Image (cartoon, rainbow, N blue to C red):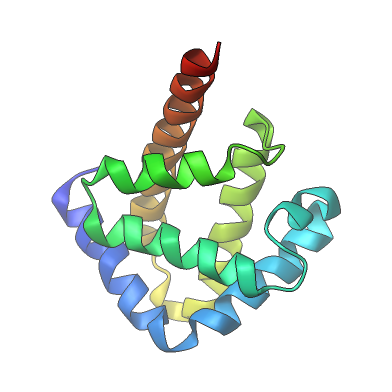
Length: 136
């Protein structure tokens, strides 16, 4: 992820900022439609999901701070999140961003978010794997 893509993601987060609860609810509703079991991982009531999505947003803001993402991975470790689930969550997040940002969700924004999600997934998987190795 280059600095221009990080700027695009950060700008999008600022644009979404005032409607982050609505965005989180939009995400949860769509995820429940796509994968009801996975949506329960994010919290049925929505409050916990909003907090988790904000933590992910914070990770985007700090950009290169992998420690924030590792912390997120440790928090999610008890939840049954498989490798395929990351793709589902990423697709639903992209759908949510497109819905919330409307015309502001350009091809450039989509590419930046895809790059960000790839980075997040790699860090989350790596942190989870490291934690499992330490537990053994």
